[in-house]
Length: 351
Image 1 (tube, rainbow, N blue to C red):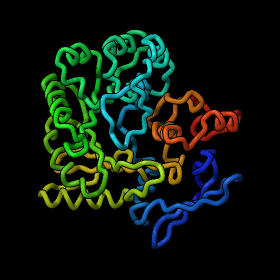
Image 2: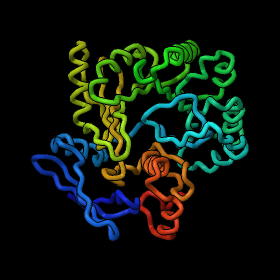
Image 3: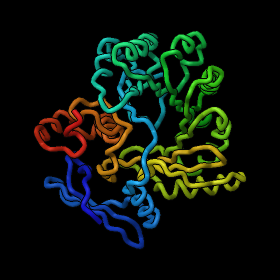
């Protein structure tokens, strides 16, 4: 196959990579001048890999979704999800409203900004943040949230006029663990539904054994949420099932429940695939880690402005750097100095 680009698993420098598709799986080999040869399996099912590859590179298959760009509005959170990439610091001071608005003004690849963090709704002044982003930056707001604070009806009604779309991390009772927090999520979703707001729900599977329960929970939102995101929870360095295995499991569990399964061609690629399950749109996700990432797959929305030196680039790309810093696997200052002035595939032209 054609040569690709990846990141070194040790220093995160951009390096060339080669993909070999064989009967036993798909392997990427990449060479870092400092850390040598690195080989990693991208997918066990070569036929699935080639199908996803051909969809990504087929110009006839467009992406009708609207572009969005994530910005961080807080490092505080009211939960402790095990598979979160964010730096959570509940003692930190939130960036000022002025600085958030100025960051939103710098967004030039999207009409919508995703307010992310940690958890944006820990800010009591979030309604004012959203209003000013609309008035001064000319952008719409998408709220990426666990929805717990939205169980407070007064707070929700104050915020809702300034939110175009809610991205709600629902998960399951077992994942959330605390019954009172789960009750708050359900109450918040009632508020969102009763307001007729546009939203989608997201779930994290810690293992493939979680899929059946997630499908049972997701079905509850068929008539109100426009999409369900189901991702495999993973941390850098952990062995995680491949995307083909997630798809196989979801299809099997759906058919056990008598649900129809049809392909849905949006922006399917090596990291996510859309399916129509029982008339409900599902996006199945297995994000890459630094070992398996192919930069060619990350040239599309969603974008982020999380790390200045990375400009306005793909959210997964930036998430890899944030997670590496979080777990002490990357000295970002040293990376900046080492890569200053270098042409970077995703960054140049998108600062």
